Length: 244
Ligand code: SF4
Ligand code: SF4
Figure 1 (cartoon, helix red, strand yellow):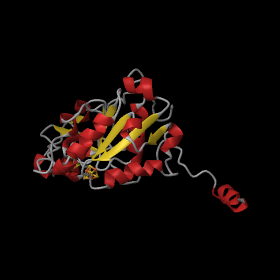
Figure 2 (cartoon, protein in one colour; figure 1 turned 90 degrees about the vertical axis):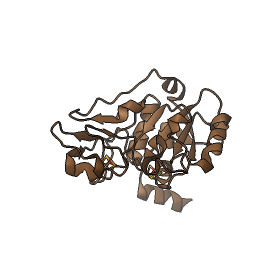
Figure 3 (tube, protein in one colour; figure 1 turned 180 degrees about the vertical axis):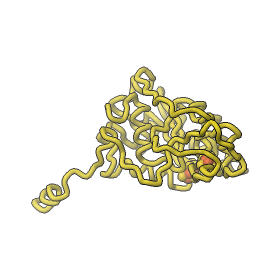
Figure 4 (spheres, protein in one colour; figure 1 turned 30 degrees about the horizontal axis):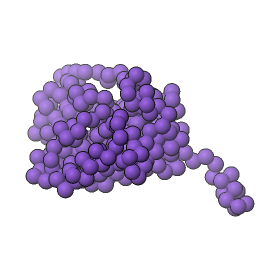
């Protein structure tokens, strides 16, 4: 007991200060892209079809950075989550948009103090799943913000889906959704869940998640960095980074 206490005193409080303070992002972190008005975009350089002639779809983007050579600039804006799919489209010449905090959504009204999440990997590569798991470690400790993972869909407010929806996982995903009680919400986490990502068009993939069930929030990335996802979850339940 004495050892445990002295170790605790020695180590101090290890959880990072985000979202009360800005997150410490790695130097190579790629956040929301902007496209200069005079950039000449070349869609052929994009492996996922995210890049158009005058726009970029963050829902399909894997943030590989390949399009940097034709004028796309990746900022450090980590607040990427969006309430609607169309907000993930970055138009050429557009500046960084204001981040929307909604306090009057059904999610905010019901889950502002406590958000219980059931996570389903519908065929992911494990990176999205691991970076979500990281939020449960002492470094991020999402439990201090009232966000917890639950084992049973019957205890969940929200279904967080990662990975492209593979044919093998479709039934399990639908059964999990059906087992949740109303009201229930869905978050599509990562390019694969949002659009199929790198696997879009594969015979083994069913469809983007929002063609299978109603999606309430989108978190782009491949995988979304833990700070991106935690900020998204906080905003999903009506809070904002720095002011929760
Ligand atoms: S960063 Fe995104 S838009 Fe650019 S090439 Fe890679 S996948 Fe395509
Ligand atoms: S979005 Fe990227 S990291 Fe997430 S499951 Fe798909 S390939 Fe893996």
